[in-house]
Length: 197
Image (cartoon, rainbow, N blue to C red; front, top):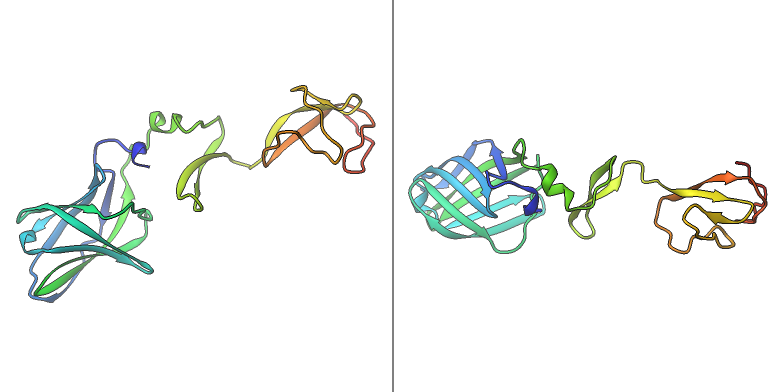
């Protein structure tokens, strides 16, 4: 998914409401994900020793790569997928306390470009669909149907020269494929032997 983004900040957050516990006085003014790193800007960030983002059923710790009083750069310990528009808690802590900030990630305008999508094999009318089984974005036809061609019901051949087998089976079917009858005939498919064009 990182290839879908430009070099400018890929994700940004909204919400700076904080709840502090203990003596951590850090404040956050900006949070972004750039070049696959979490960048936190604010005040008194040099006190922070642990960075974590949590939500219902979600808790991910980050390794602090560098920090100063005004910025922390942190790396995820594994691949992480943030739900855009979902509310998360950014938890900054040290041995003396913690501060929690409610954040919500959004895509920047222009972050997804035509050039980054063209490598996905998209066709006119396709839409992006998230496949949760493989946790990746894929292009799919909007309706889920694909006109595979025309079918001559007299000779049982398709416009691609494929022959439909008994039962209506295509030798290389793809879910959603269909044919339009171009020549009426009596080829038997799925116990149907009368076809009108």
